[in-house]
Length: 209
Ligand SMILES: [Zn+2]
Ligand SMILES: [Zn+2]
Image (cartoon, rainbow, N blue to C red; front, top):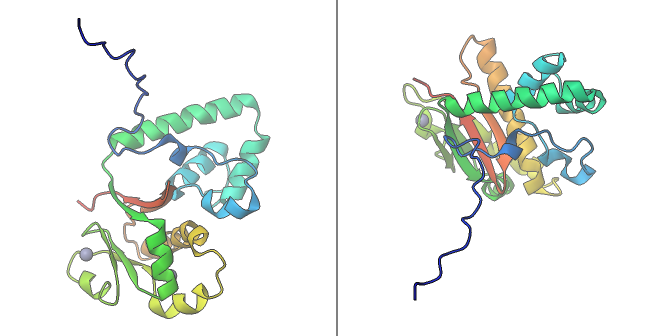
């Protein structure tokens, strides 16, 4: 007797983001009215936000809320068009070269509470924790961005109710500041972006070349 063959093969889902292993929900619109407690974790990646703002005809610096409000009031035709645009955008993204770092959100939260420095370097493609973090990325070609600063974090952290829920918004704000500052000096910001995937914060940017 032959051993029983396994039954029907597991259905295979199309892997939309095979190259970077990104997940669709990372690029989907968050619920139009998220519960207030989780609002901070429903943030659009910066690059997607500006793409959506463009598609919807909002100001280029429109906030997540503005975009969600536009989307909530859009007719079905516009929403379908938008959904197709997002798919095109996601496909294009998956075919482009991106560098990414994945860091557990809890690591950010703990560092923030302990007032421990956190530095991402776009050149070295790593996130370092601790006092020496910034000094380690001062060499030629390093592009460091401080994601947690000892002096400013300790006082702020003690007033934070939920340091974990706080992380995505805080890091995204720092990334936005980094982009704005680099642009102001005529420097490339490499489309640095961050978003939440499960329990990890994903930082992604274009290769420095
Ligand atoms: Zn911090
Ligand atoms: Zn470096």
